[in-house]
View 1 (cartoon, helix red, strand yellow):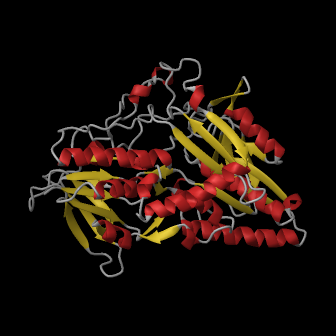
View 2 (tube, rainbow, N blue to C red):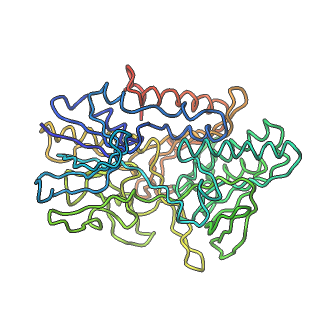
View 3 (cartoon, rainbow, N blue to C red):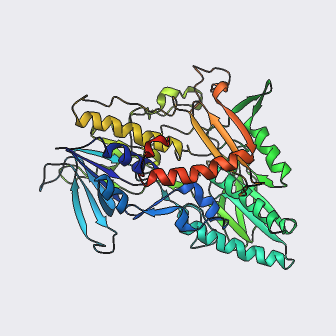
Length: 484
């Protein structure tokens, strides 16, 4: 009997567990997560504007895993010991329980195969004053989003009394990702202010580390429609202009105060933005897992990149932007040293960014880090799980499934206002996610599968997908018909 251990139960880890559970009869599957509940993170945006409650985007994991025959351990993974130690020759993960009945208890969980799907650490400390405990709010977790809604409502009530307020939304650091989440929240807030009749009392500003609007951490994209090819920058700027939202791009937020945020731009300009309410996305890092060899020596730097994400089968050779290739990106997400360890979703270390790296005259890096959330995370989780299953069953001695982001398409629906009758959403597709200028020399992507539309239909699709993914996440009957 073999044992697969998955650490992390977000989109990537939970999807992997769903697909592996039905195929590992006679073997053991363990999922380790510090959180006892699963969060459909894309809908946190709607929690942040009061259109949903936290309980609508959360559900307990234990009953789902019990139904699937999966052993669920509510604990935080602390370290990986791929060679075992003096007590056991078997590789193991050291964990500390977070469940109420065993909180603080540490334990060794042995594995034959390990999947790291831990997701990110929200690195609020990277910017002084950033975060819910300080001078801004977040929508990265359901509780964060609920607090954002509470503070937003307070500001709206002041605006109803005739006060003018400054709303600041965007990225809280020059090395952030998840521009899409900030984009969605921005337009949902603007939509809500119109609904409440106080839009004229709000000065809304979007601040981002993107070199231009529409970059989204993927270097932007081109869309072919009506015989014309348009860059996503034009599409996005049109939407901002139409809704009267000012933007500051190529910006690194240096500090977030109670009433203003200080920033530096790619041109070297420094300034401040006034704010009475601010939702700023933090940068991400790995969760802080350590690694040790059999002698107890720290080998963290061998398994993990300096940012804390796990090294996999990518080309980490440092080379100029002009020499980047689609082949740099990982295909199987297998660690090159320890072949029974994999990393998926945000947990794997990208070989480089997708957007062009840029620096201010002061040397400050101001460019998005690669997005790896949502659909790509789910696809990676499924593909890697299926590969590990085949290895456990003896069908192959190496991963036989691949899911390179340079060979993977993605669909994204970004809400721009929650309402069944006049709400809107931006529906986007692209192929591939990572541009491949060898296959598609002109634009890096296949324009037949790269598109963008905005309208009410997109809102309905996103709303329906909310229920579909909650249904799938609970492993209800026929959950497999819902794609990643």
